[in-house]
Amino acid sequence: MRRLNALLCCGLLLLVGSARADWQTDPVLFFDKFTALGQAFDPAMAELYADAAQIHSVRRYQHGLERDQKMAGDEWKALLREVLPLARKLGDKNNFSNVLITETETGFTVAAHRYSVRQCYIDENYYLKLVHDAGGKLVIMEEYSETQPQHRC
Image (cartoon, rainbow, N blue to C red; front, side, top):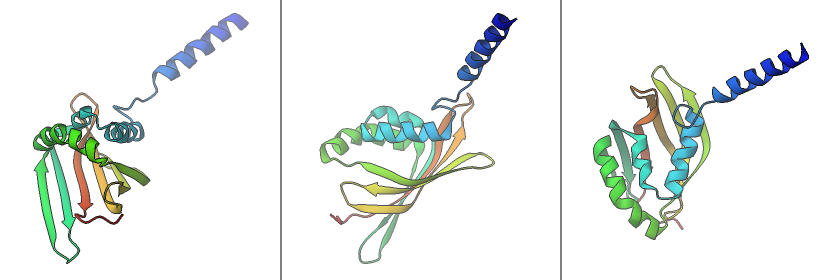
C-alpha cells in the first residue's frame, strides 16, 4: 500500500511539474524573456511581437515639442532586426523596474519604469499589451514608450 501511495505521489508531482507555465504562456516569464533578449541584443526579440502589433512612441524634446511615432508590428520587427547590431555597438540598453503585470479581458498589461542606460532617463509610462495568438502563445500586441533625444548622463 505504501508503495502504491509513493507511486501516486510521484506521478502527481510529475503531472504538476509538467503543467508549469513556460515563457510563451506566462506573462512574468514572457517579460523576463523579453528583457533578456533585449539585454543580449538578440534579433529573436522581434519574434515576440505580433505582425499586427501597434508600436507607439512619443519623443519629448527639451523645448516642449512632442513628436508621435507609430509603426505596425511587421515594420517594427524588420527595423528591430536591422538596428540591434548598432544598438549593441552604442550600448543602448534598457533596464526595467517597478514592473506591474495585470490581467485584462484580452490578455495582460505589463507596465514598468524603463531606464535608458545610454540616455540616462526614466520612462515612467512604458507599457506592453500582451495577447495570446491563435496557438495560445503570448505575443506583444502593443508597446508604448516615451523617449528623449537629449542625454541626461
